[in-house]
Length: 156
Image (cartoon, rainbow, N blue to C red; front, side):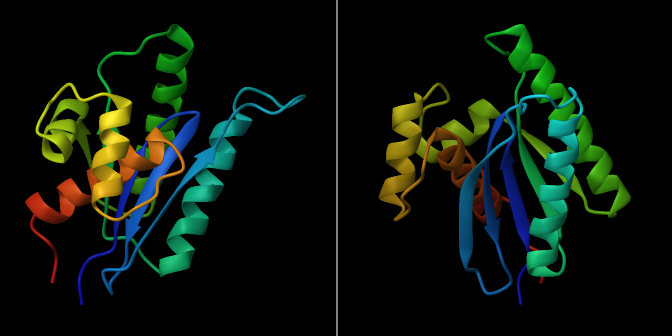
């Protein structure tokens, strides 16, 4: 029996990949765009509810890895990332789930051999692993999950 690992590419369009005890990998891309007539914090409440649904689907999560972004193209993206990061880490603390940020360059280098790989190269590397990601967010989450499975100590 292995670990249940959740890998997340945080953002308004959040990519995720989950490796269950049986080594079966599921993944997707979930949107948290603000909806019309809702307050600014509602997207984070929806994100928190979504995390809980993922956790319930596998009974428990042993560890969460997330893409650690140090630079954003726009202010809105930076603010959204900060909100998702705060929500994720507080949720992990509440559920006593260890979590770790992984630098973007580390994930890209592991997936493609280049620390500055493009979105297309990341999608391509994921397809070569046998996956069909809906977008670059899902591809990034799958790349992060494979990094974790191949480089981190797995709980027996």
